[in-house]
Length: 285
Image (cartoon, rainbow, N blue to C red; front, side):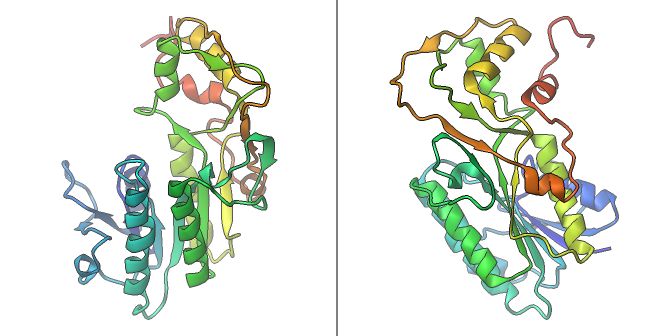
């Protein structure tokens, strides 16, 4: 069994850490503040933005999973975690007798393509937005630090507590219909499962690709998704949003590399996943 550090024990990180603990691994979680509920594995309290708070953190881990969540969309928040925080951690582990493997959670926001293009791990990722630039810089820093580093770029995460599109449907918001504006989705349970899947490969000694794009099988026009949600949850049907013919269309994300490695999605499409977010009308329970 492996010694694993999970940095960031939020709504994705905690289930990952818990599953690893249940599998028999020696898990340590790292959080900025003490958890509000008892945990079956130790939690190390530290602010990664402060090198001194990491001084007593052990550095003999076999694997590190980096799943931090900025408190806002401010660029300064992203810089503090993905630049200063990651730098402090990498320096801390330079003293380790054996450097751990790394899994870092990133985002498909590093792709600026917005004309409906298909993108994958080989596509250009040169973000314009400040927050995404800090993500992309962190990816490069981690790859430069170790050839045992793997980045997972999640698309739009949804699931319990992440029902933003359903709330938009309930408000009857207008939606871009033409040209189609694409949305890429992944259920939170698949996020957890993908990280566990990739970590298992790392611990087995498999040389992973530097990056995997984690998104479900069906990027879809937002109009189609919102219309389906309106029907399923008895919301008002959306009305077309008036936009210019050359309006941005976002990109369409491919998951071919992840599936070729053997991962099978729990929720292959938004229809599979959103049915679990809230009970469908008329469903038992």
